[in-house]
Length: 158
Image (cartoon, rainbow, N blue to C red; front, top):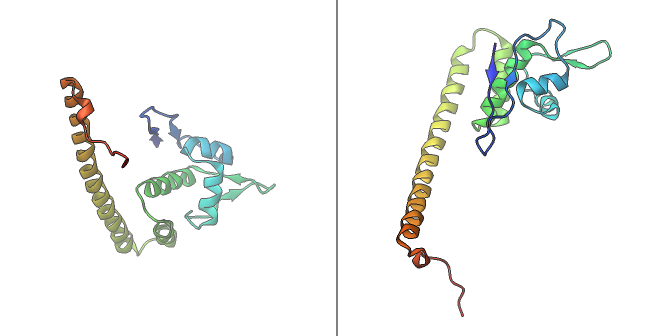
């Protein structure tokens, strides 16, 4: 069973997204949203944008029914999006997967290029974090020494 723990910006753990044990008849869009951690609006958007690998099943009344493979694919799309892959990249990946065997080298190249982009962004973020850590250390040191008022601050001209 695939299980994802989502974390908010504050670091608090949000409800787990569960995609396992999906009934054979599938689940509603609301349940799919709950299990994947994305909104029903996002699920509809993924479908309209061509990000799904196969057409989402419908009931006789036209309501969407999501199956386990649908939910697993949505989680993949969400992870790719969260790591900065453009919609067109996810769409291309979905097209390749939907086309079936024979294009694995292109899929691999797409994932390797995305990985390189993510690593570059991580390196940039780590550099930015070093500056933030430096500023924190400066403030802590100045405050402990009792001379925080001497820290540089922009001053309006007279």
